[in-house]
Image 1 (tube, rainbow, N blue to C red):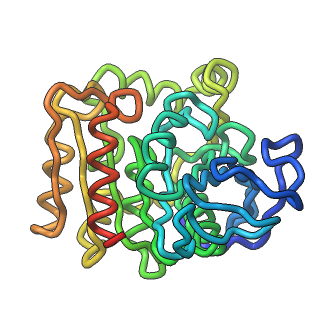
Image 2 (image 1 turned 180 degrees about the vertical axis):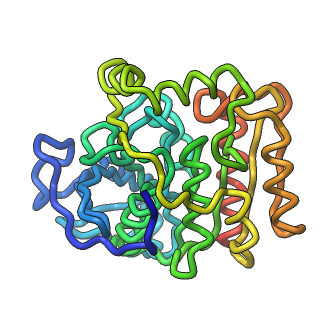
Length: 295
């Protein structure tokens, strides 16, 4: 399946039985706000807004606890890896770390969690990210940064390459540089999961991920093809030298394609994606976001 241009949020509505409770009452600063967002192609995506130090007054987002307006703080939109979701513990750990540096929007890609649709493993997921970015803007944030892990890392790169992406910086962690890579055992297992009927059953019932049965047609631009189109948006590429899925030639290819525009962090001893991201690394990413956005 092919990805169209970045879409707007056409509608949003509360998730039933969400954590937000009565939206007419004052809320504590760290209470997450949950919504379903609708993508450009009509898929409902579950999303969560963790405001960090932002203060609510009735149903309105006003400022942080120092009185600064909401728009002065960046929104960090986190795109999870394959089989992840907004309520997965490793994703919530990333959120907890990054809320020290801005408000955080997380969402479940199509086919994951309570979102609708089926996963296309990095193709139409660009529309899911676009909806989450637009929600961050609708909430009043003037600056939005995307941070993606593994599949989410490829999605943030492809999204940032769109002319109407509307982001201020992008961080890609543990992303592939090219499609159809089968050079490691974990990637061979992942391809079985995605391409075989039995694998898709395991994905649905074992990992809670509904995977589309159709192959890509046309094949979307790869991450390495997208990177040259991201400039002048600031770009950080993070990868572990012990990544079991994608060896270090992937981040090096991405950095080379950026032609000096991207910053590359090769992390000693780090494995793959959210599970391998230490608190210290997430703090450094947060500091990079803070320094890049000037907030």
